[in-house]
Length: 640
Image (cartoon, rainbow, N blue to C red; front, top):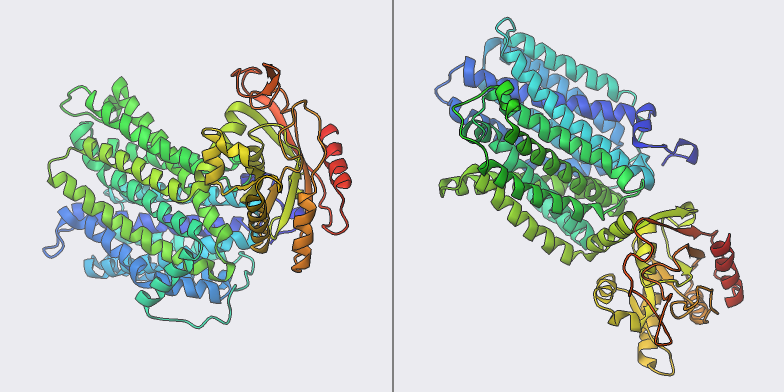
């Protein structure tokens, strides 16, 4: 893990640091080489070289299937290797393998040996299978939590740009009469050598489980890895969410040639333009995740991305229906048609949404998966991705066989995506809650956090906060990259919508001991259970929302929780935090009606984008605290 002096100011500054730049260059060159080789081979057997046993009409499908096959067969083994051995050493070994494969491909191109080149496609699939778990397990070993989203965004952007450049270069090279197949092979070999040179600078990355015994049974090990991931339901369901994104993306990418020809009435250049727009969109969406998430792993962007994917898939269907009939057009004629620009905008925003959807999920898996099993869990995800992509081809073929048009296929995927997203977010309400928190802090308030480095990155802690409004818990949730549970007045759970959200967040209702003793004791037991699990617990010690904007007296419940935790041998620090400039907003009890202070009765009473904040103080030891000392610490933060 980097020292504080190595902390990147933004995701692009990582490109100037050894812990990221050589790794980025290595993976970029590998992805470009994969796709240049595959597409050049596809063009070769489609246009230049006719082979009876390998018909050109289905060549692209077979080449894609052969490339994916190693992901199914060897992902489990590659995940074990990435956990057991130094990841930098493994990357160099994989790059050595790539050089050997491309040397073989040079001879295959020169001799026009289709069988040999198809074998090289399988071996390049093996190369990518071995590299995948190492790639995603490497990042959390060298990047801090605040850098993880930006680092993943750079990798996702680089991967899709590399795929785009590889495909375009492969097509252009094979389309030049003066370029022989042998020269394409030498270019691929040169890219492999450059990747190996870049890998030489990757810093050592010690293994996370050096004592691991390798299990070479791919089926049994895959099942074991999925069960490991299932031990953390948030991680497991995130894996399913990532695989679903690949399902959606594969449907669109596979249909671009036919969509360009049959719906847009364009030529091959129009199909290439669609690929460019889609790839650039994903790259831009991936890069936006860091700034939109304030440098944290912000999974609240995932519902936003899912919503965008469905909305723009819907509009793409309607935009396709509104296209005027045409006999055919090249790229220039296509760009001159105003209706075609709506199609491109829909594709760009759909793919941008896919970037917003996928990057936080990848970062969440890296952050929360057990370190000793991280690479194996990512390997299991690669298998799921491959299976979902195969499933996407089957579903698309079935729909087209039933008479669906390509725009109708896109509409169907958009509808199913909305249903799948809703199901995932109800199963893992943390995504939905973080989305609400993200909306609140970006569309209703201008939210700023001071001292966020004081929030502990791991281990149990109690956050003690002033209670100003009905959305205090949502704002605290937005400030912390880690999930937290809240101890809250049971009356709040009766409020429509907010009460439902708090129940989804597993907030703990607490009532006065003299009125509801069972609820009181159950609340303390759940609070202790949260600390035993090493999680964050947030408490509003005033016992209710302030009615005059002033800090009320603190109740002693927080001290009792700390005493019980200390009796169990738990070392629990207390973090004082204070919400500022929130009094007077719509959600605070500033309005007086019938002699009572009420909230949420005058929408937009302060307009939109009010500046509110959260100040985080230095941790205080849980031993020997008093209510007065805690209240004084929060008061100083609130008034400073």
